[in-house]
Amino acid sequence: MPEIIQAIRGMNDILPPATHLWQHIERILRKVLQSYGYQEIRFPIAEKTELFKRTIGEATDIVNKEMYTFLDRNGDSLTLRPEGTACCVRACLEHSLLHGRGTQRYWYTGPYFRYERPQKGRYRQFHQYGAEIFGLAGPDIDAELILTSAHILEKIGLSPYVTLQLNTLGSPRSRIEYRKALVAYLIKHKNQLDEDSLRRLDTNPLRILDSKNPELAHLIKHAPSIMNYLDHESVTHFEKLQEYLGVMDIKYKLNPQLVRGLDYYTNTVFEWVTQELGAQGTVCAGGRYDGLVEQLGGKPTPALGFAIGLERLILMIRQLNNIVKEPTLHIYFVTDGDTAFKSALKISDYLRKKVSGLKLLLHCGGGSLKNQFKKADKSGAQFALILGEHELKTHTIALKPLREEIPQQSLHQEELAEYFKLKIAGEKKKTAISS
View 1 (cartoon, rainbow, N blue to C red):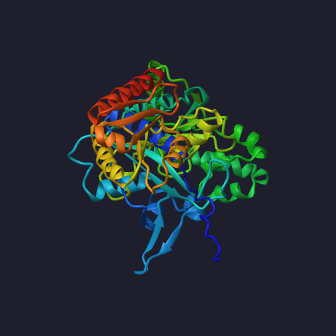
View 2: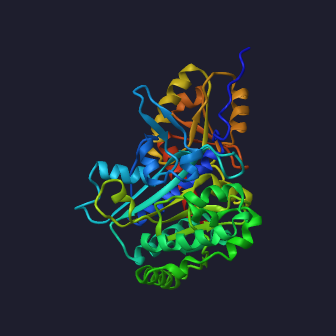
View 3: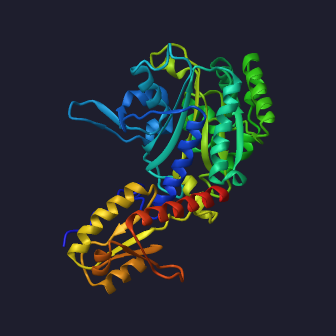
């Protein structure tokens, strides 16, 4: 026997019934984003490597250590996308979506790839929903973007378990001044830095502030604060943002160490974090990247966005036992003989077309009625439809409840359609009330 091939480490299959939970969360995300005026955009899984080197930053861990990069048959260097913002900006510039069209809002979803050490909440293939806004520079849209993310977490039922952390990185000019002060401080304490921090000292010193090494906590706590190096415009922007968040009653915690791992961020940065997932506590993160469009060859364009990690949302929901039940199968259709099966094919098609949301499974593979009823019971279906010789003669279908002590009845197919229309309408009403 040949050896069974398994999935690549850190790239996981998503199996039923877990797929239902994914679909539930994706429906909420899609519905909320559309309610705020976002349109869906889709782009390839692989992009030219230069796109990520130029945007994320060649000195970042993502570009240096984590990207899946390869040469195609033409010798071109391609990379499986490690994040979505750069792809979105590239698509917008390539197809002239940004200028002369006013403000643009886009959402997207799909898999992303980073070669990381797999652990709870961190995988080599992971899935995100992203939202991006182009053309607005004020703190009002920053506030609305954060409100959108809060709305999503509320709809999923995770609001009590997450905290908003907020910071500003200031303008590129003020960040240069801050970087000088931070490097001077860290050099004085160089003997306390770990290997990763020493490497970042020359390439990306702000990332040292985000170190998870507990031995650096005291050093980081007493590092210079970026708040002391902000220019007037950056201060005004950040103060106004906090004012808007107060109006919307969105609670937050200022975190001067929040810097994000990508070079393109400016001014506002934020993360929704939880204590429920251990070290991988960030479930949603984003901020401003006003220079990125110009960096990729476009005209200066203010922009901002966020990304939500689906795997971490799923982990939180499971950990909190907040599982959404998979929809029950409504009907298992049982037939007695080939003639009855042929009629059942037509009746099943009729019912599915007539009754929106109906979940009907027609038994295939033959077998006795006794065997078919066993399978109907195991399926979890609420009802069995029975079509045999008697039903064929009387042009009826037997409806047998499988989960309740209710008498079996015989109905015509039009009556069946009306019966299940009312039943499904009742289910939807219950779901709406409970949510």
